[in-house]
Amino acid sequence: MKNLTRTICLTLAILLGSLVTGCGADFDKGLAAYESGDFATALREWRPLAEQGNADAQFNLGVMYYKGRGVPKNYKTAVKWYTLAAEQGNASAQFYLGLMYRRGKGVPKNYKTALKWYTLAAEQGHAFAQFGLGIMYDHGQGVPQDPVYAHMWMQIAEASGYENASKNRNIVAKQMTATQIEKAQKLASECIAKKYKGC
Image 1 (cartoon, helix red, strand yellow):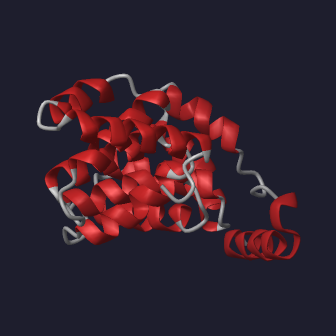
Image 2 (cartoon, rainbow, N blue to C red; image 1 turned 180 degrees about the vertical axis):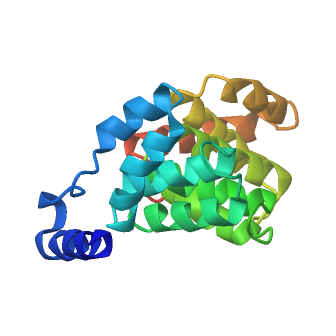
């Protein structure tokens, strides 16, 4: 009977899209449970939603597996859920997926793939992804080492709300000429004005 109910729920979700949000599963109930430390309830509420394609629930399951909250820590399973959410445009999932590829957690280390996911998240205004791009340009990970772009992305990250980006930006600036710093600041201003598209 439980399998029949699940099949009906999934069929309705496919046919009706977002009109059906889980046949009993409740995202906000899962969120409240997670925040209070009741990970079993969060998992019970989010898993059906994630299986139906809810990107936020998929991202949250990724976090649970990444941190081992209510489930055994499993980076490969975290990558699975992050990927599903990231492919739907969830900026936080894109950032964390980029982080997983950059660090080689649950997947082989791959700077090019990390760069792809960081860029998608950064273009949506995700400050940590913007900072991550700055680090990658500073270290030449997946891109040629470029202090101008490192400085630019760190400045953008700070403008997007990541205050600690300024510390790293100032370190990068010590290795740059005044002309390079001016160019980085101009690029950052242009990028912010374009709302991060095509930076």
